[in-house]
Image (cartoon, rainbow, N blue to C red; front, side, top):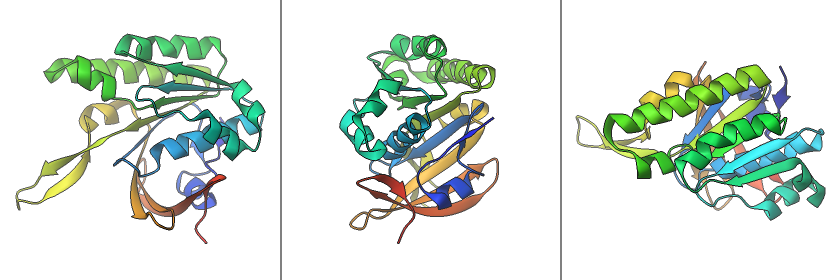
Length: 217
């Protein structure tokens, strides 16, 4: 087991040292809360120490120039295999391709968007759980850090107010070893908040700069 650093010491401490290999880490939050930026920073950290990363992009979020900026060199991209998944079959089959690539980090950004478009009702939950089971089995067997990002939805409460809940969260949580919610704290200063929900509870603040994630000043 090893840890892949996020770029922020406070966030690494919250995660017990960073994102762990052999586990599925589920990161969810509203749009603009730093999910993809965290993924880019993890790719930069992974390649910086000589390992390979595998990035499955389901929503057109991957920015190679941003990863290069965070890593400090364009050569980092040579250690990243990029897959643009256009349907769930592309997304599911990418797991075996990551195994062949000997990746130490596998990112799926985002997890549920394609399943949401192609499935409905109970079939959607079953398909997502099957995919996550494959990801969890791969993470453990290959000693690879698997990071998935996910969306949130506004759910009504008994008081009439709405709260943010992870999309398909009841299904995603079954095979996720670590769950963390990101939120925007001060967008003008690039400040963000992380709340660890599983396996323990805690919070951390971090910043996003031109060089990636860091601690707040």
